[in-house]
Image (tube, rainbow, N blue to C red):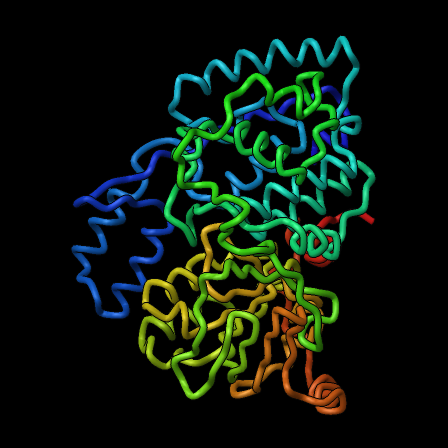
Amino acid sequence: MAMGRLNRPSIMVYGGTIKPGHFQGNTLDIVTAFQVFGEFVGGSISDDERMNVVRNSCPGAGACGGMYTANTMACAIEAMGMSLPGSSSTPAEDPLKLIECHKAGEYLLELMKMDLKPRDIITPKSLHNAMVIVMALGGSTNAVLHLIAIARSVGLDLTLDDFQKVSDKVPFLADLKPSGKYVMEDVHKIGGTPAIIRHLLELDFLDGDCITVTGKTLAENVRAFPCLAEGQQIIRPLSNPIKETGHIQILYGNLAPEGSVAKITGKEGLYFSGAVYYSISNLFCPALVFEGEESMIEAISENPTSFKGKVVVIRGEGPKGGPGMPEMLTPTSAIMGAGLGKEVALLTDGRFSGGSHGYVVGHICPEAQEGGPLGLIKNGDVITIDVQKRSMDVQLTDEELEERRKRWSAPPYKADRGVLHKYIKSVQSASNGCVTDE
C-alpha cells in the first residue's frame, strides 16, 4: 500500500515461511498450537500434552507455515508482479532468501533506470492474477481486505463482487494447511510459486503479459523455472480439484446487506450433528451470541458441548468495534480442536486468520458497532446460510428487525481519545478494505 501511494520504483522482499515443527512423529505448526487448546478444553488431552505441542510448533524464524495470511499475500504479490520470482515460497532460513535480498538491490537499480513504478505494475489485470492464485491455493480471507486496500492505494477499484467472479471460475487446487495436509516449505520443494504460476498460465487462468519488477512479463519470468515436480501431491490436477470453484464466497442477505466473506473449502462435512440437517451449501440452526471473542472463549472452555448445533455469533469485532478488526483464530481453533468443526458455524463482523478453517463467515457488513443487523441478533434466532444462493439471513421479518433497531443503542467505543479514536472515526467498512481515506 505504501509503495502504491508513493509510486516510486519498489520491490517487496518477503521474509519467508517458517519450517514445520515435529514432535513424536507429528508435523506441527502455529495452528496446531492454537487448536490444541480446544483439544485440552474438550478433555481429549492433558495439559502436559498440550504444552509439548506448543513448545515444538514453531521451530525457527519465518511466517506462519501454511497457506495462512502472510504466505497468501506473498503469493498474491508475486503473482501481481511486485516481488521477484520465488520470493513467496522460499523459506526464511533457506540460503536462497539471502540471495534474493541481494538480487532485489540489483533489480531495484534497473527499475530506477526504466522508471518502472508500482502503478505501472499493479493494474486491473495483475490484481486479477493475484485473486486467481489466492483462489487456486485456498488462501486467506484476509486477501479480500488487503487486495481491495492495495487497489485503492493505486487509484483502482476492487470490490467483493470481483472476488466472487474469480471464485466462480477458478478451482481450489492446493492441498495446503489449514484445511489440507502440506505447508509452504513443501511448495518450495516441488518448484515453488514460479512452478505454480507456470501451471496456472498453462491452464489459462492467469494473464502472462503483465509486467513485473524484473522488467519482464509474468510469463517470461517463469520460463526460467521448472514445471511442478513430477509426482507431486500438493497441487491437484484440474480433473480432480479439492473444490470445483474457489473457497472464498461472498454472501449477502438481511444479515449482511453490504456483504460478507465466507471460507468454504468443501471439507466442512455434510451433516450437523444436532437436530438440524445441513449440507455444505446450506446451514440452518439457532444463534449463540457473544459480545467479543473473550466471552466466547470463556464459554467454550467451560462447556464445549453447549456449542453443538449452533451458529456462533461473535460481534463487536469490526473495524470500528474492535477497533481494528481483530482476527478470530483463537475461537475457530478452539472449535476445531474441541472436535466441533462439523457441528458449529461461526459468524463475525471481525476477520479470520488465514489459519482459521471450518464453516466460517466474517467481514459481515455493516458491523454491529454501526447498527448492522448482526448487532440485533439474539440467542435462539434461526440463521440460514445458503452458499449456493450466496445468501445469509436471519429468519426475522423486516418489521421485526426494524423494531429491534428502534430499541438498539450503539455500544460505547473502546477508545475515546488518541490515535485509536481517530481511527474509529475515519475507518471505512471491511467491504471497502478498511481504508481510512475517502
